[in-house]
Length: 94
Figure 1: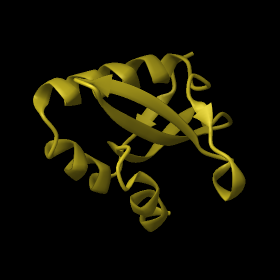
Figure 2: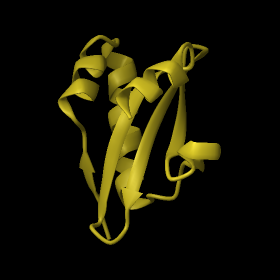
Figure 3: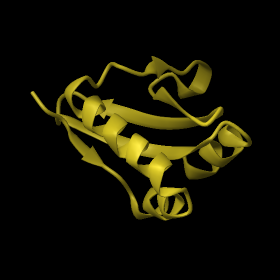
Figure 4: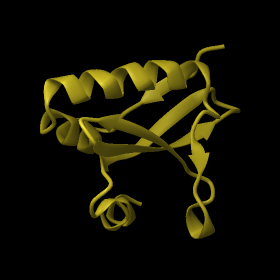
């Protein structure tokens, strides 16, 4: 069963700032994620309902944080960005 990936406009704006090869890797990862929603690693603490998926491109680590809603068969993308300042930006989005 494929999950529907929901990407809010704020995350789309972040994607437009990234290089095209990185965006392609991220979109490919989202495609895989739509088929395997438990692929990512669960976060801890007060972010425990979220999961992260790490992607590497030219020694730079990018993270996709998402929430899988199994009852609605949806994956909501919360944030996509590099590891640097990632959690500060994530907390602003929540």
